[in-house]
Image (cartoon, rainbow, N blue to C red):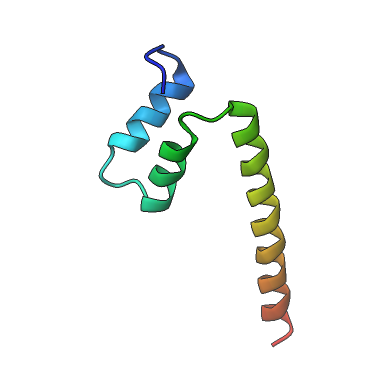
Length: 65
């Protein structure tokens, strides 16, 4: 990440430094550091869409039991 101080970068740094942060999230933040923020955002939105769909599938399966 750049050395510039912004709320978004400060939050990312805090998450990376926190021992309570998930392994998956810290890895995602580290791998995104050098990427274009818009590309990262698009990928993140795709992940959210996929897992929202998966959650809906799971809850529909539970209702069918």
